[in-house]
Length: 616
Image (tube, rainbow, N blue to C red):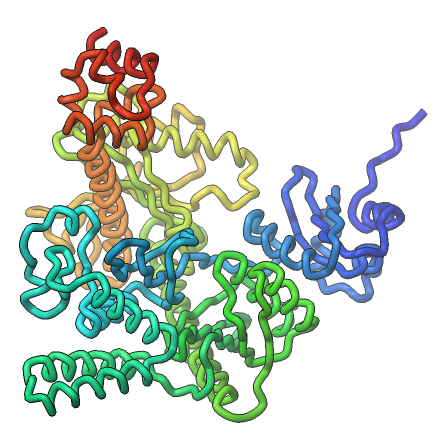
């Protein structure tokens, strides 16, 4: 008897179709190694998946994907809207090579009003606390900082941290320069401060005109009463509010809580521009350049972008689009389901909303053309890079390595990644030294450990070099000694096809006189005005910056570490109670067993564990 050959490609998909229900869901196409090729959604799984077995209706790219398919995974959902949400989440998590990918998924900053007797406005990223109020998102941290500076001047809310606020005995400089009303020393009572907070909330919620009219009325009243100092203070606050309004360009009448999204495609790439309007104010804009394939339609790209973008960002109540998307009602239903309030999608045809979309479209066109120009320049530099180091093709992925420490303390290794799209910060990595036998400050040993761990992991995770994880070139911050270390690591791991070079600072550490070390060649320099040298310097400097910032983070963490952290069962609450009771970690160490049991939340068993930790 002969074994039946496993079904592959269209034959396999044809077999799967027989088992599929005519219901909504999500399907995943997998290759022979289980890697995800594509994630798709369907209103009717049976009909959608069966479309892949008819080659006449498929593009060359999709036919290639079908031929690579060895397995499929199916998930049924209650509705098409749920299928869209699941599809967007899986694409973002799995990054299938045949899907449209939104690679820039940074969180946006908000302004947070803290939950406190005397609240403060602060910049915030990350999860939201239900007890606190948030305003945004803003397009950049700079926009938040600028807005906060003006709001503190206009509403005199405290900028200090709660710990500073709690321990102040006299007003700080912010009070002296009229940027704070000094609630820390009760220069303002709680009711008056609450009114300042209420005005700030109303302003950020879109009621800026009402707030200004109210302040103007009070200013006139003080002026008529010949209270000119109070009137002057209110005048300055009104001017500050006018300034933040001008900076936020309040130009779209009736647009309160909305995102404006426009798309423009050119030269095989797409640029998407998104403007954020919150509380009637423009909180800035951001450009995106999703990874697409030639046969992706504009409407498909826009729909996929919206699905992925609002997986990690809260959707507003209204989204204005430059182009129609298929199944807009279903997409709105999915966003409403994900945000638990009604979200409306529309393509404005006239009026201020149409003008806002046209402005976003102009920005999308301009941003894409700038991106194309920058990418062309980047490609030229990569070709020059290949010529300098004798590479056959321009590298798609360059990994740059550096170390940082102070006299061997808090040593950390750093890796950055660069390619045709510039620096790829998503792929940056930090390495904490694990070898406890390292001589402090031994740069060679540190580099050996970093490269051994990095390249050894690549050999384990991607031995066939098919997943795009391997670099095309390594650039090491170091000299001839580092070159020997890298060569030894390559020999130990059996790597002979990964080119690398070391870059050493020139005499007196002069930029422009760097020396390059490559195995089998004499050390060489590049002309000080060569564009490729400036590019390599930027790579080296970025690796140096990342290594130093990683070292500083590690050092800062060590400075706030406590001996109590090493005791099993002592979390943040118990640690806080112990430090509050004894005043310091040394006080806890000197405490008797009986006194430890007097601390709230510390049982006798836990007290004995603490005592034994310090006293053996």
